[in-house]
Image (cartoon, rainbow, N blue to C red; front, top):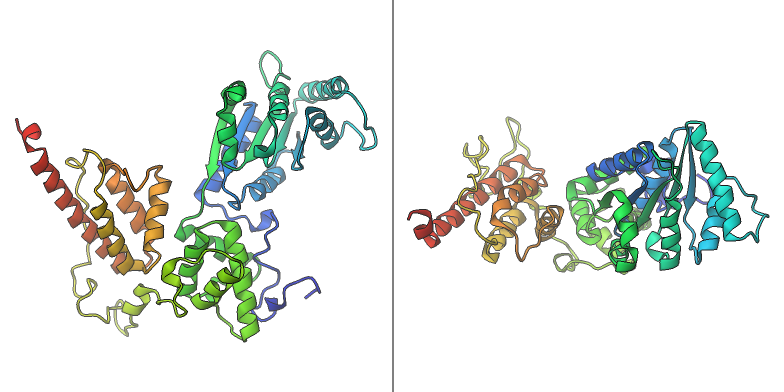
Length: 422
C-alpha cells in the first residue's frame, strides 16, 4: 500500500481505492442508460451526424462515460476534448487547434481567422484520408452565448455529403434550458442525437457498488443489506454521492475496528458530508431491512416467514399474480390514496426506502406523482416490483397491487358507467 492509498484497503482486502471520485473508466458501471448513451455517442461520431447532446445531473458519471468513449474510439478518429472554462470564441478555437495537435502551445496570439484556416485545412486532410474528427466539450452549460454560437459555426465545416467535424456537447440539465433560448434555436435544431443520464435505481446502485468493489478486489458483502438501503436513501442513486458515502463509511468502519459496514455508519458518513439524511434514517439505530426480519433459514425447502400473518406462509405465493389489463383505467390521473397504498405495500416488502423507489420509478417513466396517468399503472407496478429482491415479498406486492388496481377499475366503471354502457 502506498502512502497515498486509503488506510482501510488492507483491512477490507482491497487492492485499490474502489470509490475514488476521479473519472476512471476502468470502474465504469454499464447501466442500461450508460450503454444507450455510449451507443448514441459512437453512432453520432461514426455516422457523421454532426451534433450530439449528453446531459445529466451532477455526479451521474458523464465525464467518466466520455473518458470511456475516448478509449473506444477508432485509431482513425482524431479527438479534441475541451473541459476547461472557455470565455470567448478566440480561446475556444485556440484550444481546439491545440488539442487536435495542429498548433503548438507556444504559438499564441493568432487571430480567429488564422485558427479557422488551420482547422479547416486539418479537417479536409483528415476527411481525404477517410478518417474522422470529433470535438467533445464538457460542462457546456457554462459556455457563454457567444462561445456557443462559435461552436455552432464549427459545424459549417462540411462537404456536400458529410460533416467534417462531429461535436458532442456534455453538460448538466441547465444546458438543455440554455439551448431552449431563442438565441440558440439554430444550434438546437442541429442536434441530431441526445441522451440524458439519470440517477441509478436501487438495483443498479447495488450493482454499481458491487462492480467497483470487484474491480478493487473486494466484495459487496462488506456492506450489510441495511447499509445498502441507507446508501440509496441518502445518495438517491447519484454515483458520485454513492462514492463519497461509501468511502467515508469505510473510514468509519476502519476507525471503529469493524469488518462490515452497517446502516448507522452510512448515516454517520452522510452527516459528516452534510448530505441530507431521510427522516426514516434519523433514528440512531435505523430499522433493519424488513425482508430480512421476516426471513429465516430453513433446513428443508425455501425460507418461510417468522410472522404467521405474512403472505409467504402457505402456498398462496407459488404462482405469480396476474395484474389485470388496464381497460378500465384509462381515464385521468391516479388518485393519491392509491399511491399511499402502494408505498405501504412496498414498505412491507423492502423497508423505509419505499417512497424513494416509487418516486424514482415514476421519474424513470417520465411522469409525476401528482398527475400520474392510470393507463401506465401496469408499467409502474412491474418496474417497481423488480426492485424487491426477496421473491415471496415481490409476489405479495404484486398481488396487493393487483387487488388495488381492480378496486380502482371498479370505481371507474361505476363513475363512468353511463358513458361505457349507453
